[in-house]
Image (cartoon, rainbow, N blue to C red; front, top):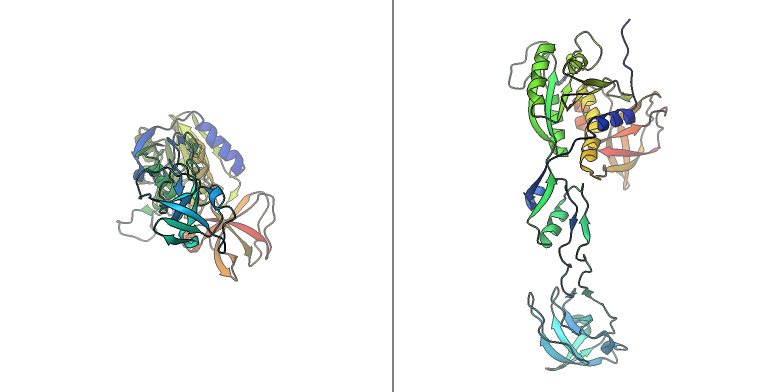
Length: 409
Ligand code: AMP
Ligand code: MG
């Protein structure tokens, strides 16, 4: 009788995977701001000074003492004495006294003594030296207070934050030129299978072109891993051992697709076990697609055996590798999802978590969610999909009209 996989839940497999790398400390490096896009902060960042560093006007208008405008209106304007103007990018070199006003452009510095701005729309010149203010403003009106955006020493970003364009801009605005980020974990990707050839080789009957080193490497790149190499090897233990030995010297993690089940030619588990302790600690995950999943370690390098089916390989990648990066870096990324309404029933057998590829279509401002049918060997099914829907382990499918969250690709 054929031996069966002893499957573990996705949560258990994740825990095992994390525990294998519990002592792993990623290296850190300092990079220029623009190289920091998409990278994960290795240290919290605090503001070196107040932002803004001085009270700034948010409008074109006149800096005033708010009290001087109280009760002012169209009909009964307040009369103020003009005390010159503040130039953009220059220090305000006048001090405002009672009954006085100073012209300040948007973003300009409020002169000492002023505590509010009146927009030009609400003033009128009486003569060269006198301004009529037709609006009452309260203290702080139309002013970005010193430190209102950020106070000195305030934490802007925590360790583990993945840098986005607005973050790069903010860091530049604080005077930072470089940031301390984690070095991406180094990952090697191996596809196994006697049937596999590389895209540059000629196809012959029975052969197929390796897709997994490409799709997995691309996913790794997108998520912020460093792909150190890709290899395609035959279903031969000695060859796989040699390839693993080569990569063990440089990689933190090795992904091996194909040969992860219990068939005669499935050598991944045996090979991982042969490389050293502890060897494989997981063989089988309660998920569809993706059941033949292996997690192990040898010589301190995490090895994950993924199913050869291209869709399954990517689903397992998604379930294990992204959370692993978050765990290693303390990253707090939120997986983007949209919520929509199912257009048809989706059956599912309880006992395994189930992932269904779906497309999204907008109808009257709402998303309609339709499953894509196909086998897990068909990467085109995933290519057509906008995302996937998770059916929890003990649920017997979803019904037409159900609201579901779509995990976006
Ligand atoms: P396996 O997991 O080795 O039993 O492979 C399952 C299926 O996935 C088989 O049909 C393989 O031909 C196919 N497959 C395995 N590896 C790859 C790959 N790298 N690219 C595309 N298809 C693959
Ligand atoms: Mg195979």
